[in-house]
Length: 312
Image 1: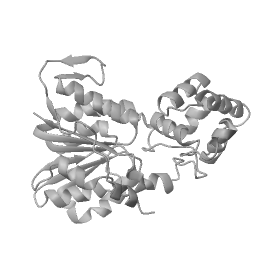
Image 2: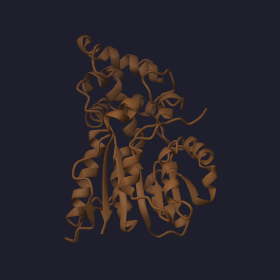
Image 3: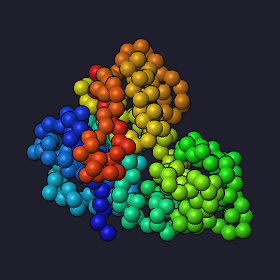
Image 4: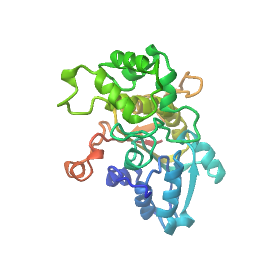
């Protein structure tokens, strides 16, 4: 099935990445290659793009979408924390720009068959990379009640986290929860009746989001890649990040503030590295948001926030 997704804030991404002919850009979240194609049109004829995605379907779809640029691209299957490995494979030490688009694609929600959407009856998987070991079903059926509460509260900011976790544990005591539809129905019943209907979002939205974040270790990997990515930029190279919820945006904002002060946090040792010299210029004091026109044309872009930095 075609890998369909409308990229968010394409014009702004091109502007903040400062895409020009001859530049080398890394798209760390290739998806349907919408951003990648727009970038390539700006950096050809002698520019080069490295595309990374942990979803094999995205890689295969992008290979077809970008076939006319085959001499200007290299596609790499893996999580974006492996960006150094992808560059080393091409003997590239530093690049002019790096893009991170942290959103879930429309294809993954509607057509992947992996249970990302509470509106589908699909296996409860939620792995972006199907080579990964842990699925959402593993977490739902095996994790302790208290750990489930923490996932729903921290990653989903779910008001009814304890009620929902208690309901999950009760149901799984006599049968496994195997599909997205089963989980959505369970969440709906766990939420107090007066909060089930007429709300701005479906009651299962935050639970599904928090499980997806946990399965794919999204926040931990985001912290890791932000530190690594800056070190892979050339002087005047730029990093552009599109985030879609407050937890992601907070991590990006905090890391930018540290880098502005000449500080960072080692993603593996979790130690502060401080030399007092600012390593970046913050290009977006406040996050850039999509225009009303774009949101009307592409509702999935409504929560997008763009932040960008330039390396000294």
